[in-house]
Image 1 (tube, one colour):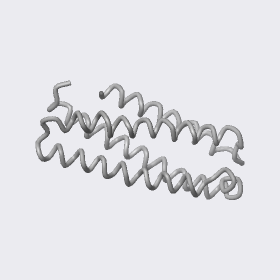
Image 2 (cartoon, helix red, strand yellow):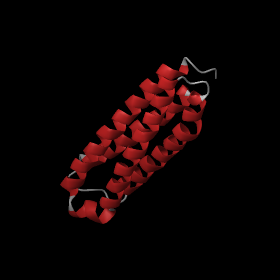
Image 3 (cartoon, one colour):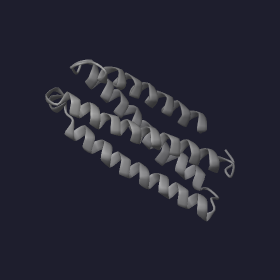
Image 4 (spheres, one colour):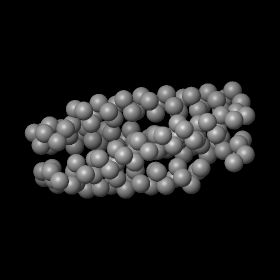
Length: 135
C-alpha cells in the first residue's frame, strides 16, 4: 500500500516538475501545458481513488478512535483540496491562461504547494497508521 502511494506521489511530483518547467517560459505552450495539466489531473484523480477506496478502508479495519479520526481528517482535507483544485482548473482554462499568463503562474504555484502539503500529510499519516494494520 505504501509502495503504491509512493508511486502515485512520484508521478504527481514528475507532473508538477513538468508544469513548473513550462511555467518558467515567457509564454504558455498551447500544446504542452494543457497536456501536462491533464496528465497531472489524471494521476491526482487516480491517487484520490486509491486513498479513498483502498488506503482509508484498509486502515480503518481495527482502527482505534485516534486512527479513525485521522482517516476522517485525511478524507476531509482531500475533499477540500479537491474543491480548490477543481475551482483552479475551472478558472484557468486554456483561454484564461493565454490571457493572464502571470496570473496563472501565481495561481498554479499556490496549487503546487497545496498538493505537496497533501502528499506530505498522506505519507506521514499512512506511515504512522500502517503499524496497526495487518496487510
